[in-house]
Length: 246
Image (cartoon, rainbow, N blue to C red):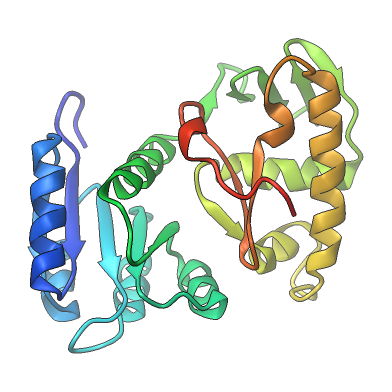
């Protein structure tokens, strides 16, 4: 997306009424929308236009929408927001593990969809990195090179494992990180089912951040997606926060 240009959206949805409603809503808010009704036309549209973000229904008439995720992820890190009537946790996890960045379960509000879409576009622009490579989210500053975390300039003492968990989540700010992906990133590929490890560490990180920022909201920076994983919220996303508890 060039500076000053409206973001381009590829909307893949086979239901005509839903597609028309979402397209009208997004265009009214200044977004450029390309429509596709099935996986084949979606892949062709993506190859031709290379949109800034893909909004994808999983229940497509030709092949499963997961096929589109695999195809996009073979070549690009384009944000993918899944729309799905499948409310089973396993379906959400499968889409996220394949490379989707977030999901909205049908029925959904267009306001929620727009908020999630904007969050992914902000995340795609990269975290707020400083000149020395440290990352800042509000009053939180994470220095990867020095393994240091500060809040408002005050040090937060995290264990090495706590630091790694926070680093992975901050590095994917605005995006759901599944339990399995977080376990593999921090503990290694031999781990994938030990979600209770993460609950303990996230709880400890939340407590330490809250103690360092008693007048702020960093204790709620990490939000749980029940049964799926965790999400670090980007600044400005506070009005749609969900599931702060583990």
